[in-house]
Structure formats: structure tokens, C-alpha cells
Length: 127
Image (cartoon, rainbow, N blue to C red; front, side):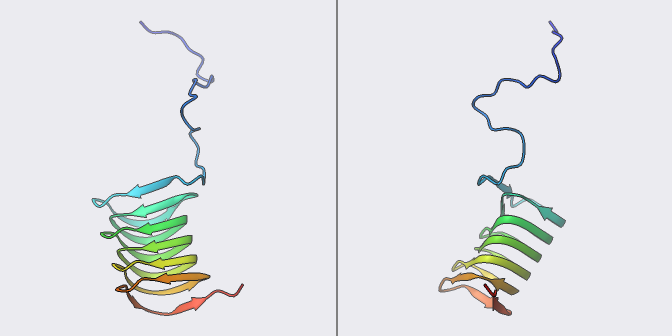
């Protein structure tokens, strides 16, 4: 019924990726039922559907239509469809038509769709 196996041997998994964090486009989704207070760090992308209060550092961040982020955000790309309050440092910053942003934003490139609500300081990073 039970077999003794070598615990150090890696199982054969030709159809699965290795169990390690990779910045290969993987996205961590923080669902609408979550409220998180604290620091979130990811080597990949984060999609926020819930309520985050704290610091987010990631390769990419998407704040979904029902998502809310309050705090400090540092990411290569930031796309806001919901609400973002605080401070943002990003290479590419996009505000979709449903976005409500009250933040100090440092960016290299920016997209603001018609209908987005913005308040704060927007500073173009020196290249």
C-alpha cells in the first residue's frame, strides 16, 4: 500500500513549469473578497480586485474595476481601472475611463482615457 521513495528525487512533470517564482508573465490575482494591509512584493504581475492598504512592489500592477489600492506603488507598468490613492512610481502608467486616482505619480509614459478622474501631481521621470 505504501512505498518508500527517495524524497530528494524530483517527480517527472514534463507538462508543468518549475515551482519557483519567475517574471515570465505570471499574474497573481488578489480577489474581490480580500482586504490586505501591509507589504506585497512580486517578481511578476499583480491584479487587484479587492482592497489593498500598504506598499506594492511588482513588475506590473493592474487595479481592476472594483479594486482599491491605498499606499505606495512601485512597478514597471501600472494600469488603473478602479481606485488608487497614494504615491506611484512607474515607467508606464495607464488610467482607464473608470479610474479614480488621487496620487503623486512619477512616470516615463502615461495614458489617460476620457472619463478618468485624476487628482494629484504627475511628474515625468528624467531619462
